[in-house]
Amino acid sequence: MPMCSFADGFSMFDVTPVENLFIEEYMLRASGDFVKVYIYGLRLCYHPVEGATVPTIARALGMEEKTVLEAFIYWERVGVLRRVADNPPAYSFFNLKQAMLNRKPEGDIPKADRDFNIALQDLFGTRLLQAQDYERVYKIIEELGMAPEVVLLLVKHCIECSGRGTAVTFASIEKEATRWAKVGALNLRAAEDHLRTLSASYEGARNVLRQLGMRRAPTVAEEALFSKWTRDWGLPLDVILSSCAETTRIAQPNFAYLNKVLENLRKKNITSQQELESARQAREEAMRPVREVLDALGAKGVSPTEDLAALYASWLQMGFSHEAVLRAARTALRAGKSRFEDVSQQLSEWKKRGLLAPQDIDAFLARDRAEKRLLRAVFEAAGIGREPAAEDKRLAGQWREKGYAEPVVLVAAESARNAKDPMRYIDHVLETWSSRGIRTAEAARAEREKWAAEKKNAAAAPQQAPAPQGMGRPSKEVGAHRFAQRTYTDEELDALLFSDEDDLNP
Image (tube, rainbow, N blue to C red; front, side, top):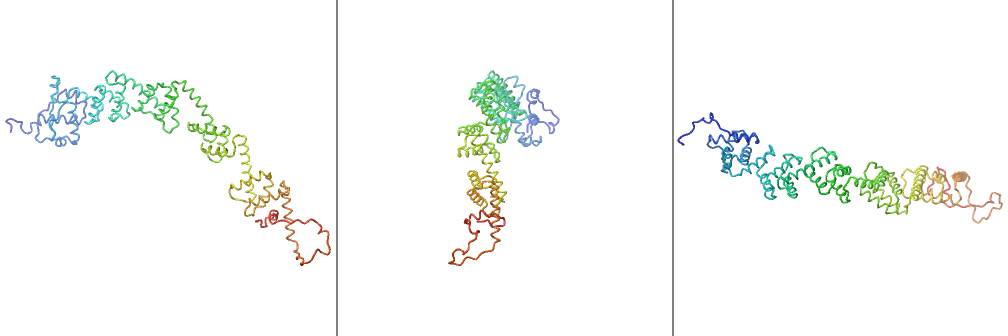
């Protein structure tokens, strides 16, 4: 044992001196747990405890071992102690006053590096930087040739503008450092000039966000985009803010979409508000017919797009006028369709029929409406409960072409209530009446009543036995025998017997 030593329990009533320099320069920046570890370690320097290790210190302070190790790493990084052994870890504490008086620290870390490490950690507050974080920062200094004070400005800018605060990633800091290096912001003066530019970009990007309806701070990427629009492309702020209106076409307006809008302006050499207004008026005029088609489709309030404008232009190239296109849109809407593709389909059908001029389309639509109206009336008169089919429409078209009057057709329809195929029955009746010169509803009803009465009389008359074979004309003729006899086919009889009680099926 040593010749002289403190008695047991001496350390309990002794003191552990803490330099004021430590309090002023280091303690105020560090977290409470790290300060506790330093003071406890300082006590062990003055009053060593045999077997003191990281686990025993953690138990004494009520901390996790991980926190104790992080504290020693922190104090080593800021230069108040150094690691002298690894397994188990051991540390040597510096005399801070002596280091300051000699201007030569006792540790392996140069004072400039220690000051830089402290300043860097201060920027992140309670977020403890890890060894790999410092490695990435020093890599920026070494590989890009960026001065340490510029790196501190860079990191501060990223923390303030990233939108994540001190949670900013070092990957994003490295990307921003690359941008700074490209513009030559490697020394303090160049960095400060660049920061003034970025400050304007930050304010401009924030104005854009407000214009887009967002109340957050711009990200570094958004700030870089704004800088590109203004510095590289030469677009003034009023043009950028006016262009924000174009982003309302998407559900969530953003900088990426606005970048595409502004890129289109750049391709058109639009760099002023006056040029933008002229281009906008020209676009409004070009989009006016497209908007009218949207209105005709019942899509009022929907903004026309370049794709819709291109589709509209293809219809004009097919030979249709604007009025013809509007007729197609209204026709599609009446059929329950409201897309531009539906208009294309309708126009394609009309083109196949040779219908391009509005007057020809109107005549076709009028005929179509008349045929549909006629079919509805015919189906009601004939007691048909289904929807008209293509064959029905074809027959209705034939009746129109043959000049059958609608009232005559309806009289024929009334006679077909009990037919198995009412439409063909009506067609046969109309053809028979036409061959006999029956053109009006009055004549048709008279014909129907006449033959209904004749059939009724024929059914009531007694049946005569057939004349015996070999017998010639009656020995005596009466006047009733002297009239022209007519013969009828079965189809004609079926068409002319109209009683509802009769079997009208062929």
